[in-house]
Length: 175
Image (cartoon, rainbow, N blue to C red; front, side, top):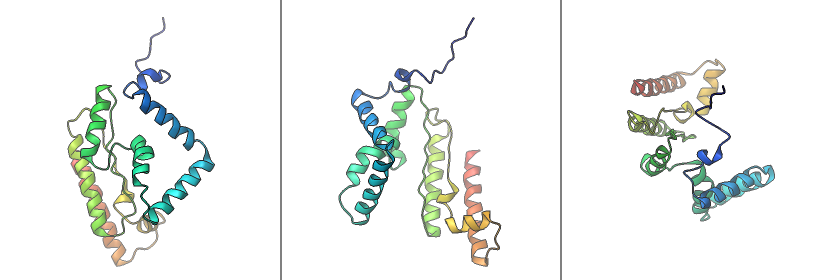
């Protein structure tokens, strides 16, 4: 006797039942473009140039790639998406993944946003677990030096201590 698995990854009618036909067609279009390396490279380059030149392309980015892969720019904007997914027993991860900050204030701001995602997820079945990236709370140069076991300057040691404190703060929030 064969037991039917609870989860069937081959049954896309279940996997995408929360999307309308219009949303599915849009997703198909996006994935068709993303699957073409040349088109993807051109689109990424064009987007970077457009943003650098302050051209009005944010709406285009938001209504295509961003809307498909992201629930929102903040917890409030993401709420509708994760509540909708929860109706179909799909859990969501609030992944605040801003990287590239250069200042301690920027790293602290990212840490605070991550802590807010942990607050929102606590006791919320729609948000089964939390994640964070250390690269949002420290400079890439510092992390590379630590990884390479290079000798850190006094300032770098202080910065690394602050990074560890941020991580400790987030881990403490998880319990």
